[in-house]
Length: 445
Image 1 (cartoon, rainbow, N blue to C red):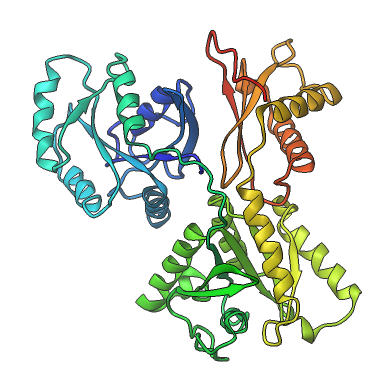
Image 2: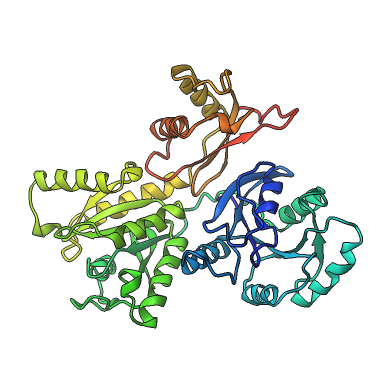
């Protein structure tokens, strides 16, 4: 299973970023008395009681961004809430219960996930009495914390770990694979689904935007069960003129989050658009295996055109050089079965687990071949590597100082993993984590 996620939410200026840095034991998020400093989601890997989870810092709910980015900040908060397995609802003891706190609590009312109510800035013991008013939010026990006085950090971590989903063993049986079929309008997504299921299950029309909701279609091929999720064609946000289009785009994003593999459709006769890049950005944010699918290939011919499209896509999406590219004609079914077979391969890759021994030998060889640059006149050292999750494969490198490894060297190590392990065509999460004292690492197998 993938690494669980824990989202920190709350109104502006309750100390969410301070709490994030405090739990992470490193200053990552910007902390300032001015509200609205945090806009994008900030993520880091935390280890507590032999469990790993990703901690996510978010912007203040209910605040207005001075640079007119309020809608983008809210979107990032919603993404964090949707992805989270556990939510930390943070309030401020010193200012007391505010209307915005109640608004945040109301937003979380229908969320069927564990919520821990954290009364932050409880610097003094007597302030715990003041925290009792937060029981009005209906979240039960209130945990008082102070990042400046280091109060109740261990207890908060214990509560988080208790509420994380139980790690499950990988099942031998092959589960249903969910395919999200995404792309901008009129690239042939619904026609492709009809070809898959060999029946008119989807409305197919030349009018752009016919599909207004995400539709799940179950079908079987060679004894394997698939669920194809046809999604609304996306357009620029400023062109979304109706509520149907607005909610359609959100449902398409939900399908991406649910998917095991994403098929990103392009029309062979059209160039890549800004909408395509925005959509692929969302796919990358969610670390989903993806295949670029060039549809309507019957309108173009020859290996020259194929090579041109490959070069073009690699130039448009340089950080996705590992993603496969498929050329199909959805209407006739040409190359469709090969596309599904490759999707199955990606699904298996995303669920692969590599032994600690194999990982450590590979990392040691990579370091011997290319030493990391000096940091503060010393050569940085990696003690050991371990894979902590799948879907996506998540690898942690334990070292003395994570900051000693720059982005170029991290990309080098990621390339080594991709070139030599069994998940070379799917996203890989790579974390460099500071080793604790007396941590000898896991036994190699």
